[in-house]
Image 1: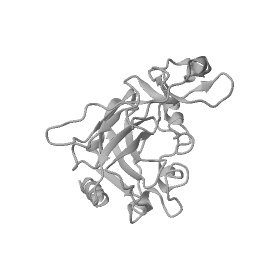
Image 2 (image 1 turned 120 degrees about the vertical axis):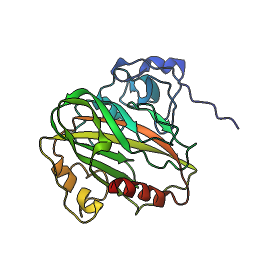
Image 3 (image 1 turned 60 degrees about the vertical axis):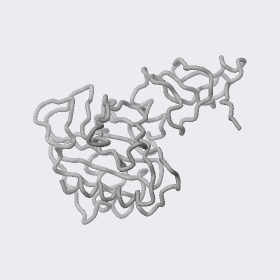
Image 4 (image 1 turned 135 degrees about the vertical axis):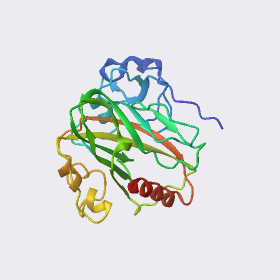
Length: 274
């Protein structure tokens, strides 16, 4: 049976407005949890109503969205991150999917599908490019995978030396890498899974040090068990205090296999030893 897409009645079009009076692509209702429902230049946003504050989701233009718009729409601020980053990361470069395929630069809201590459099980950030250069000092790049859910993961490349003002930071040059995977929660039994990636860039004038015997001790500590307290009440939040200088959010879909968690943990452990 074919399910017809839900389209708003013509009488309600004028009552459903994209945030900031943005332009909708059309009046077919979208689902923000479903991959690639909107064309390039649009994203699935909750509309405002002329009569009340509730609304349907429509594909709305994204070109004028601020970093605060993105992080608020994705329910990352203030739930996960107390304050949005000061600027959007312009592009993110992930580790290659294979020896013959490099990903194109990834922009905010992009959807990356790696199902054709079953051995590719986690996206490691290799570099980030920002609109405004960071000053000489130290940069720390935090990647939180599925921050609003469990299981979740945290990957931190820290103490990346910036010798002169730079817009692009080579994250893979970091000699310090730690990763935590919440393996206490089972993965959903699906053939593929769409992960949300939140990437944040922090700056400090001097290097930071992490204490603890395990990645959990270093990043979350004993009293934090999910991403909601990661940036407010954890060891890493005290080291990276303040507003991120840049951030972005995008999505990566992977094929899920029975040994997915074991292979994921192996991959991050290899990066941690490099």
